[in-house]
Image 1 (spheres, rainbow, N blue to C red):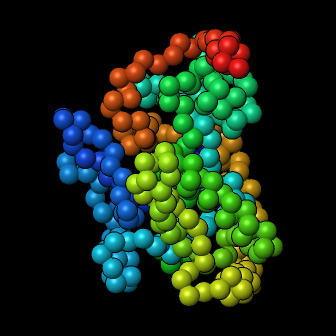
Image 2 (image 1 turned 30 degrees about the vertical axis):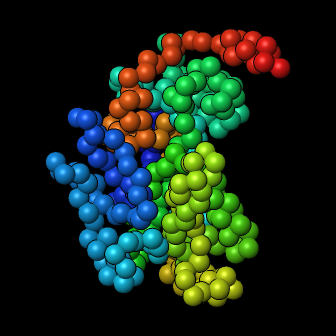
Image 3 (image 1 turned 60 degrees about the vertical axis):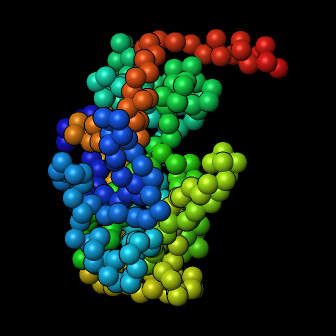
Length: 292
């Protein structure tokens, strides 16, 4: 296995709740109030829709896709949703730093280093919105029993927090059978003072419409029995995924980085200069001390 290369779940499509639009000669992200399933191919008009997008819309009987039936690949919540604070170099597109609020992996002139991670609001290195929470959720949508997935990427705290909470709770009540539960991604909206009372949308993970939690747990037990009879080793799959994720310093490929920068770091942010490779938190601490 090539060291330094994160081995991630095979992806056959994307799940998004927005699109890229042209504005004053720049491509900027625009939020939407529905899901869109795309392939991994772009043309001049944008991402090409995946055939499942139209299929799910027909099944739902609505023009706006706000629920997607899914199954999770792994039993461990943190394998399905990897979330961390991430920062990229705007000029080269390469990842500079990724942390969990306690420790981070930072690319420096001396090489990769393990450093303290105070979170974006308290980090001098990632100040000015350069460092963001970034989550990646892999789910299976098609009914075929394979290991391919669709990926949902988000920098939204509401989606990251809600998805992780749901998976932790479902993992607990199902006795660890998270990958066997029938679930659906559901788009929800809410208003906050920060959104100036306009609705913002985030992604939730719930049992299918019309199915109680008790019924979903029964389905999970039956699915587990079917898999055991077929020799499906979920524990080994989770172990393999854990080893694969840990094989790289960052979970990004070269062809994925431009897409991430375009969608989550729009053009006006790219004009901001990146901080130098070495900065301390002393200046920020002094400002906080004066403010208090």
